Image 1: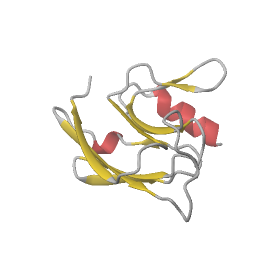
Image 2: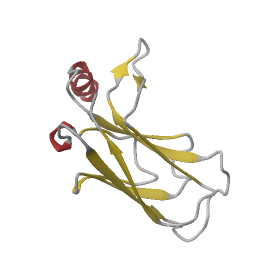
Image 3: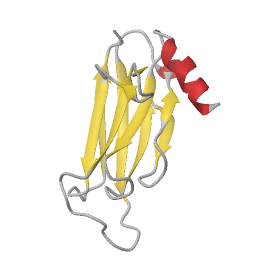
Image 4: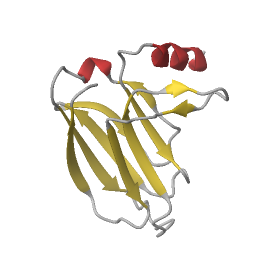
Length: 130
């Protein structure tokens, strides 16, 4: 059922989705609070499953402000210090490829933190929907 829901979401060309990707789940140790135009749309935790979330209702015509509050969550010990271990958040439009994987060809937002990063931050970006 989850796959059908994702397929339906991705088939609507007007919809915007939030995706997260981790190349080594849990090792970046970053949790993200994602805000669009001041609305908290999702909290993403480092060790949780991949997120595909419909955020269309938060996107307005014209300029949109995205704020991502990133918190390093050491949880007692650092798991990695590698700059090659990362967690990313994308906002944009995606599609399923022939293997059923989500492909984001041109994200509006592409945000990344690595295991080498240690600081908490709140970063702001803007985009105008295409």
